Image: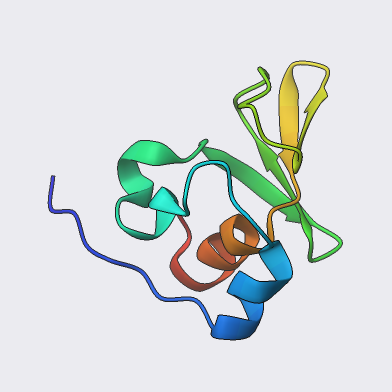
Length: 81
């Protein structure tokens, strides 16, 4: 798999605040992020993973989860990862 780096604006990084994972999703989202299902209301990303990833921006929801991280949402919007 060819890994690449992804960009998000400084405003998005600032909006996301401190990340417990040091924003490692920006350097290899193919291997480090939950698989996205769909985006709801432009800010809630439904993901296949249901366990809490030790992140305050992740909410377990039934058989899936909701990621509210602005960086993760931006990665989905711009790159569909």
